[in-house]
Image (tube, rainbow, N blue to C red; front, side, top):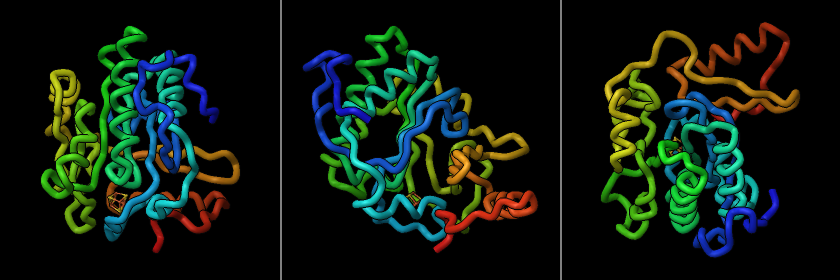
Amino acid sequence: MAGNTERLGAGVYPGAEGPVRIADAYFPVETLGPGRRLALWFQGCALACPGCMSRHTWDADGGRAATVGDLLQLWDAALADGAEGLTVSGGEPLQQPSALAALLLGAGRLRLARGRPEADLLVYTGHEPGEVPPEVWAALDGADAVVTGRFRIAEPTDLVWRGSANQRLVPRTPLGARRYAPHLDRDYPRGPRVTVHTDGTHARVYGVPARGELRRLERASAATGVHLTDPSWRP
Ligand code: SF4
């Protein structure tokens, strides 16, 4: 990704030059919030939930380096391609609070500049309110909705976009309330909760799997002769 934010308009996106480490970016993802979305996975998570499907995101020095402006360019391109929202997950986005705050501020301004005010911003954090300093939690101020709380493998749930029953989906803005009200108590329909994307060498699994879904995925894949090596959900 280039570090060039000129096309977005100099000075309009404070912090766009700031660094951020990410694990992945993909558009369109339809399993992490309503509609076709740009999904960004921040790198680094110290919470180490047992059963985490994304252990490759734990190392704060892993992933790849980018700037907030790079991510805003992805958002700009996704908006032009009809994106209905942005989902920031991880890893733990609050481990990079300055980058997260700048990204959400810029993404909010960009959707207005592009005439797409209903494109919402959703953030996943493993933290609960009050668990981190207020100045860190304030990085979420630009989010229209958040999913909060650790992943707890012993507390499965059928609620959409949540991995365990303790996790809460919380709208934070009028837009978030409009977009998420129909989904707060909605269960997943029957069927897969994740999608798999492959480039022929690597497979990426996007979404919030049901218990056992990743194991079934591995078995189904093996049955077709494709054996997953070193899946990110294995310790
Ligand atoms: S489930 Fe989320 S919060 Fe928990 S260890 Fe994995 S990335 Fe971190």
